Every structure is written in C-alpha cells, then in structure tokens.
Image 1 (cartoon, rainbow, N blue to C red):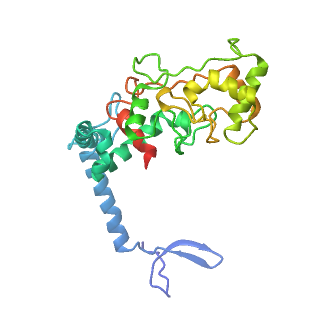
Image 2: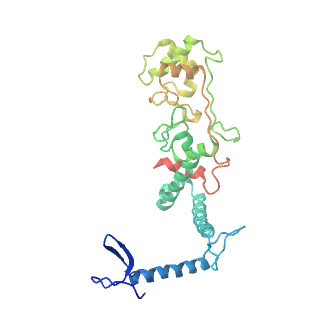
Image 3: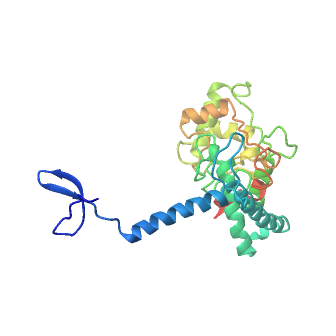
Length: 285
C-alpha cells in the first residue's frame, strides 16, 4: 500500500493500528512455520484419501488402502489366537503334574491361569485368592480336597456340589441340631470339643464321646480331617465359617453346603480360557 508506514527501528511495515503511540507491526511468519503449515494441509489431504475419514449416511469412507482399526484388531487377534492355540495344544498333551518340568510352558500356563482366574474366580475368592467367610482362602496351605495341581484341577473342572456335573466333589455333613440328631446341649458339647482341637476351649468327656460317635468318621479322631471326604481339618485354627463358639455351634446345628460351579462345563471360561487346566496355576506360584 502506498500510504503504508515503515517502522524505522525494524524496517517492518505497520498494520496501521496505533494505541497510545504503540503501533502493530506486520511481521511475516517464519518460513519454517509456513512450510510446516502447508505440509500439514498436504498430509491431511493424503490421509483423507488413504484412510477412513468422512462419516457418511450408512458408513464412513473406507480409503484407498482399505485399512480400519477393526480390521487391524481382527488380524492381531487372529495372530494371537494362533499362538494361543499352539500353547493350548501343548498343554493338552502334557499332564498337569509334569508342567513343572517345562519352565516355558509352565510360564504360559501361569499367565493364562491368572487371566482365567480374574474372569471366573475373583468374585468369590478375591483378587489375591484370600477368600472370605464361606469362601476358601486359596493363598494358604489348607485344602479340603488336596493341594497338589492334579487335585486342584479336578476341583475346578468338576466343582463342589455342582448339580450339573456327575463327577463333582461331594461331601455332606448332617445338620445335627436341625435334624434332631443331637440336642442343643449336645451340640454345644461337640462345638466345645471341636474348638479344643485348636486350643480355643478345654475338652470335655461328653464332647469327646459325642465327637467320636458322630464326627470322627469324616474328621478323624484327632480332628485333622480326611481329604477323601472333603472334611476340613479342625485343628489348624483355619475356619471357613468362623471360629467363635456361636459360629461353630451354628455350623454343627445347621451344616453348610457351599457350592462351586464345574468350570469345565460352564459357559465360562471359553475355549480360549481353559480354567480347568490354567486356574490352579493362578495361585500355585
């Protein structure tokens, strides 16, 4: 412009704006910034052509390369499934008792077991396997049906009192008080004797006699339990339903019959998460 003023100090044209003696300079943008800006425009045009970009009425544009994030996910999942299928095939051919002899396969089984455990087991046993009242602690060394890998695998596969599995773990303790097998006083005597095994009460002759006649067949004369019956050890101070006298009395009066689903036959886990083989390894190491 003919009337454009040039700033003497910088030699830059002004914009014609002035406020209190301060004038706005028409300083040009750095060349690198301008070139970068034009490059982003070219990149955007190329991206719109190559990749999905514009939403349409029924679907978006697909781009000349035909790439989609869903397609990439499906390809990665297919590749992952192929790897998992190989591992599952190897696991199927190795008895679970022998997994410790194959460190690489064992590591894969432990990783798969942790994933399956988080999906299928934490609801009852907790994220760390600590359990709760009525739900066994899987982090200690107290096992009703055996604590080796094969025994745990069998429990997970067939469950505990699972109605839809003919091979489920099954144990049955009578409700001594509710069914009229013992009087309330006798129930108290038996509960007191049970507590004496872990030093929580003093044994009595009547309680010992009643225990020997009604409980020793499954729990053993010393109360240490018998795993073939799923009878708990009453002498280790580990209690599933509580160790207070009132709680033990309640258990003798009305027996508990907790259930665990047979995971091998349940809808979960899927073939991708064979909990029957993998879950034991979730807390074993």
